[in-house]
Amino acid sequence: MTSATRYRRILLKLSGEALLGDLEYGVDPKVVAFVAEQVRSVRDLGVEVGIVVGGGNIFRGMAAATATGMDRATADYIGMLATAMNGLALQDGLERGGVPTRVMTAIDMNEVAEPYIRRRAVRHIEKGRVVIFVCGTGNPYFTTDTAAALRAVEIGAEIVLKATKVDGVYDKDPVQHTDAKRYSSITYSKVLVDGLKVLDAAAVSLCMENDLPIVVFDLDAHENIVKAVRGEDIGTLISRGGER
Image 1 (cartoon, rainbow, N blue to C red):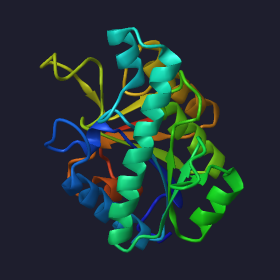
Image 2 (image 1 turned 180 degrees about the horizontal axis):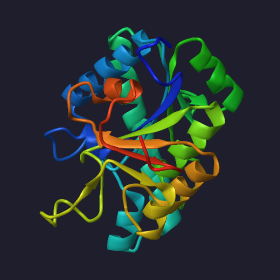
Image 3 (image 1 turned 120 degrees about the vertical axis):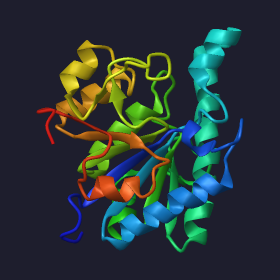
């Protein structure tokens, strides 16, 4: 870590939808290259990086269960496998950019990824490798937001950076309401009490219990990951004090 950065170790949460780019389905190689370049820039600053990636660009378990009547646990397992595909695509993009990367999975698939073992993950990170955590927590009924909070706590990350398609936390859906207000900062408690849908309640509660701040920001803006690592005022900070 250099004096130009605020954090020594981060957990970057990427939604599956963020990887869509201009596509209707799947992974846009341009987005992968864009993310890989930003992650490489962060590593060049001496910051250690873990990543949790979602699978909503391929399959969203809860939505499928609600729409089709599919068993929820089965749908969630399919969604976990979607995160593994995204993780492998992201690994390829990072390594083509010269960033050593490991994919670690909560569901055994030894031919394509390492099993998640906390001490091994920490060792990879200490050696300067980016670690991509896939398949969520390995359990149905838990979102990848919760997996991100859990992995962040386990590896000793100092902040969760949630990269999305919106530029922060709003008091209501900015897509449906033109008068929606964006928060610069907000407390964990207000997110939970007001039922703001930027992260699920389990993830927010876990971060609150461990005093782990979260920054929600727009992935598409140039160098926003680097700016977040530097502690610049982007997106929305969720913390105990709710102040930057």
